[in-house]
Image (cartoon, rainbow, N blue to C red; front, side):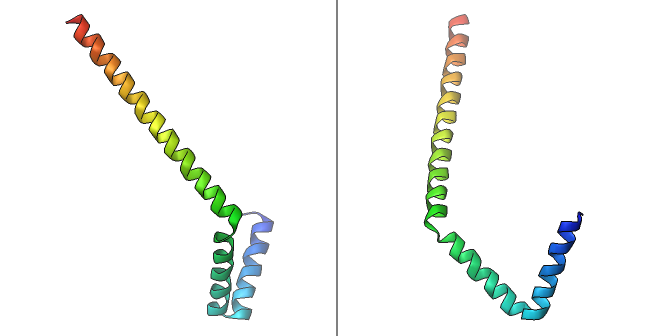
Length: 78
């Protein structure tokens, strides 16, 4: 690991020892909740869900079209 990583690990360890495990984890949890409730994060998550849903639908339709084309080609060759 790099020097910066070891420095960060040391800072976190000292923070845990200084604050206590419960206080440290409680503060960490509150920070995560604040970030998760930020409007920007909620908007980004909603947009990502929309894009994934649209992409999934396009992919499914593409597979269905390819399947039907192959099925028609087999039927026409028989």
